[in-house]
Length: 172
Image 1 (cartoon, rainbow, N blue to C red):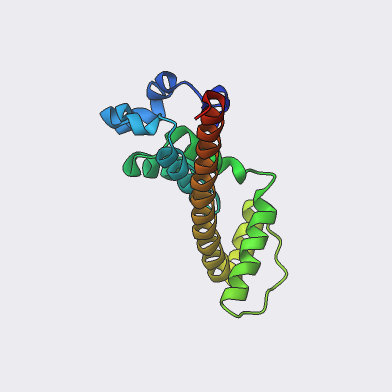
Image 2: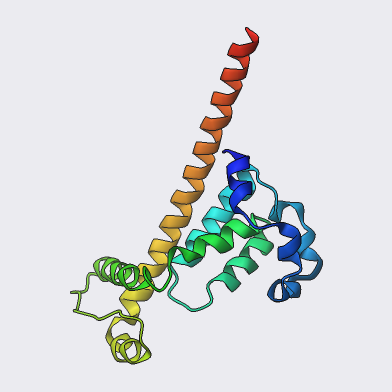
């Protein structure tokens, strides 16, 4: 993968280490794998970020960061990817994961309003929590696995092409 492109958009790891919410991880933040852009670290960060992105809970960045630190994957990528679900995308994603969960559980889907208000969530959760939870977990696992495989595959293709281009330039 083009490291320069990723480095341009990722925050500086020195500044992140000093962030007050990340201080609780202590010296673990000095692990090179949390900041290094290699195939294993980036693919793991993508998997962690995509997994937590589809779990319907507030403050998804905290468990994503904790998992990235524990699994020694790229921390900034994991934290950034949870923002796939944001206040704009959360209602349609929750609805889709609910429908997916209802399909997995072979339950008839109900009409549910997933707009982000506390009243709607409390009124609707009684009858939809099981399909929502099952659908969210299944979507999280699928997205993480697909993201991991695609990043590894894309990275490998990029490296092979670079090697072939270099060999062609040098005439070997």
